[in-house]
Structure formats: C-alpha cells, structure tokens
Image 1: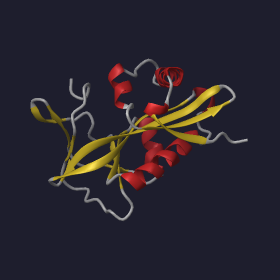
Image 2: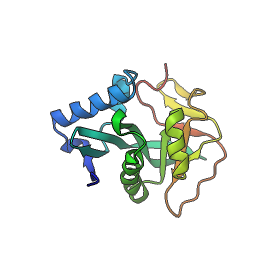
Image 3: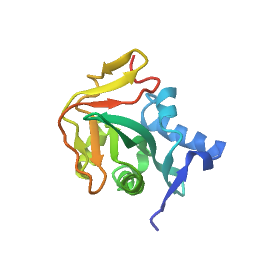
Length: 179
C-alpha cells in the first residue's frame, strides 16, 4: 500500500513530530542543515509521508514576500524537502511536491524555492522555471544582491497568472540569508 501524503500546519505538529522532521533533515542534508534552515521551514504547512519505518519524506511551504517589477507578491516558498535515504528515487519527493503545489496553486501569487543541484532536476521536471535574473534580499542594511543564489532559484507562477521572467527578484529578509 502506498503511504499517503498528509498536509499539516506547524501549529498542529507536536514536539515529537518536529524532532522527527528535524532528524530526517539533518540526516538527508549530511549535517549541513542549520538552525536558520530549520527556522525557515516553520510556520507554514508541511507535507509528510510516513511508512512502517517512520517519516519517509517531508517538505514545507511557508509564506514570504517577493518583489518583482515593483509589486510585492504573496509567495509560497518551498523549504526543507527531504526523502529518507532508503526510499529515495521512489517518487516520494514528487508526492511531497504534489501536496505542496496543491496548496501553492490555491493560496499564493507565486511559488519559489532555492534548489540544490539534485533537487533542481525534480523541480524542473515538474515545470518550475530557473530564475534567469538577479536575486536580492531586503536586508536590515537595504537591498543586497545574493549572487550565490542566482541560477538556483526556481519559480512557479500561480495558475492563470503568467510571470515575466525578466528583471530581478527581491526576497524578504530572514536571518541566515546573508552572511
């Protein structure tokens, strides 16, 4: 039987559930998942797939504001997508994205995410588009360019809302975004 994907808000996760998600992320990212990364994935909805061994896959969708062409867009930002090592390449990442994209398509003007090289293949296959222009963040010191993010930010316009892929994106500020 195929395990189902549950969509749960952070507020409805208990301490044990949050610890299980964090453990999956720490393991999936080989210890390169910071406290700031963890914080970025909280406060929205989580797509969870569990099997007989426990949590098999996770992804989060949180609200951010992204400025494009002078307009601040309500953006569903995908964070913390991970699949347990023993069930990778079995379609669970796609099922997590199915759940998150369902919410994104109904609640946001834009979807966005920052992809790893491995993750980029999944997102591109699902129709996400690599942002071709500059990426900035609105920092406490003003707008700061994020050249390390360029080429790794993917976007997905809401249905019926085409997105002009020219210009720049300015993302709202979060701790850990600019070092």
